Length: 265
Image (cartoon, rainbow, N blue to C red):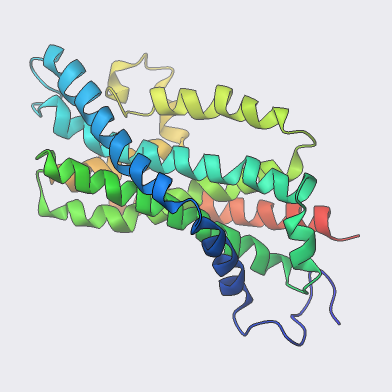
């Protein structure tokens, strides 16, 4: 036998986190068709509505770039943010409070780190596949201006982890799901609106720009935009990646602490 946070015991797969990931994939088999439909329909509606609708009023484009190709990388990054947060809030909180899936998993026995890693892997799977679907739609609409756009597939997993890991910690820590709605209202929505997705951060008042630069979404947007447009990012690529990695690492550590506090008795 082992403790909740200790070593895996007999009968646990050699890579227990993979077994946890497989558990979520099995459940996802029942709903993936609706997810695939929305993954393609929503990007099409968003590209048409914002790219062509709003873009028709942006005569000069942004920094000499037509509005649609300038907008699309920001929408891809914000899609990663929204999917990562959606999959890391109520699903995580319910696994503690309502369906108690985590308690069953830790009794398997599985290590807390395996439970966190396996569920995070599934969240990244959802975020990355949604972003790649958006990237495909953007390619169909001719909104990708550089072959470097393929590197978006390497950027979005790190952005997704930088978002999902801290939200895992938050969802495990809060005593009520009402706090999750506050997260969307006071973090996700402002971050989506003011992190360079729809307009340049430089057009904001100077005092507000550092707040945008501090968010992980802005770094993801800048990297994706540099990739799809074939231009240099505003920060160095290494600086962006290290900053996102710092968010992911800190989030992972906080998530482990929060999960262990909930699961160890």
